Image (tube, rainbow, N blue to C red):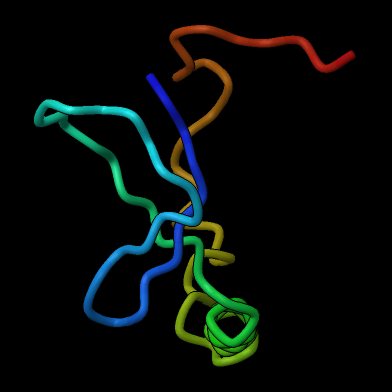
Amino acid sequence: MISVKALFDGKKIKLPEKINIMEPQEVIVTFLGTDKDELLHQEIYKIAETGGSLDFLNAPEEDIYSDNDLKVKYKND
């Protein structure tokens, strides 16, 4: 397996260096995002935290599981 950085210009993936692979290969392409994407995610998290849509999870009736329901219990060190 070979990993290289590349640049996607919106149409094509451009490799910064020549890769000597002469046969078809399966690849995994991961879009790393930009700072702008990270800011959007942070805004979404903030809305989820402060918007109140998840407040129901703090209600006592939502806390229906206990340690006895765990299949495996891990110790905190």
